[in-house]
Image (tube, rainbow, N blue to C red; front, side, top):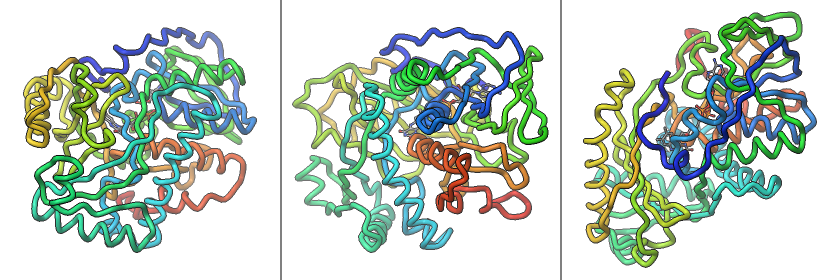
Length: 408
Ligand SMILES: Cc1cc2nc3c(=O)[nH]c(=O)nc-3n(C[C@H](O)[C@H](O)[C@H](O)COP(=O)(O)OP(=O)(O)OC[C@H]3O[C@@H](n4cnc5c(N)ncnc54)[C@H](O)[C@@H]3O)c2cc1C
């Protein structure tokens, strides 16, 4: 699948990690990770740090799937608001999902501290805007749910929103626990760190075509017929993981993003917060380390890459228009724009862990708008499963939540 098109900012800004190491023999390793995006990277990080022997296999250039197209906002707020998720899946699981999401931002920060990788990780605040009256009503319910469950939040009414953000709107929720990063620089930086420190083997380009379950593990077969024998296989294949799933559990969407030319720092809004809204699909924006504005949204149901790509020009105009509705005085000079494919699930949560009956095939599928924070959770849960440790997050994010027919 063609995962993105156009000019994703991170691949232009950073030097390409031009690494070529195809597999030329059969191979054996304790844990085989399929995918070298941010998810496979964080899984490898957790396994390497715990002395578990693993290797990564990717059919593309390293970290060149969705990871390169991401706008990389890290928020504890999940696409489905907490008060709605409580109604859908119950209080304990919904609050557990939100708390896990909050914790994962600190855990990602600690990966940077531990490895010393400079991934442009930066703590920022979030402003979640009410797009209309229905959104304002939802925001008030959301505020109460978050306060009740002790999640960081502040309610901004119309007056406070105008005073603090200069935005004419009904109101918003604010928190100061979010972050942003450069996903490509982060993923390739962390991979290089473990290649050096733990001799992490990375094979790219290597496409896994099919697999067999064997005694105590799996045998993976590459497109040129080499066999990889492993005790565990981790599916970190992003939105292309369908080939490894007994049943499709996600919907594919197309999404659009752009980055402006740098602007003067005195033009930025309060704290250079991440800003998003209650409307669906939502518009969102952040800033970059070199003083650009990055924005995205305008999602559509995915049909085919050609249709997705043809819409890019029109979507860019719409994104700029939405930005200027909030900040009419900031002129946006679009520098780069791109589109990508991403997946969402019906309950807004990722799929992490093993499919019933496939104990040694572990999935790290961070579907939804919080893909990267979910990747961090997946990495830790998978590490715990392999180490035989109990992790309560498997009940929240596992396949056990599917019905017998494999639906949510
Ligand atoms: C425009 C856009 C904006 C986004 N914004 C945000 C955001 O603000 N915050 C956030 O948290 N998330 C965001 N996301 C989602 C986030 O980017 C993804 O969740 C994340 O990048 C997924 O990483 P991954 O490693 O799972 O997948 P990928 O980066 O796609 O990596 C999977 C890898 O698996 C490899 N692979 C697949 N199949 C095989 C096979 N058979 N054999 C070998 N290799 C294989 C692929 O080549 C690929 O490199 C955004 C996504 C997009 C597109």
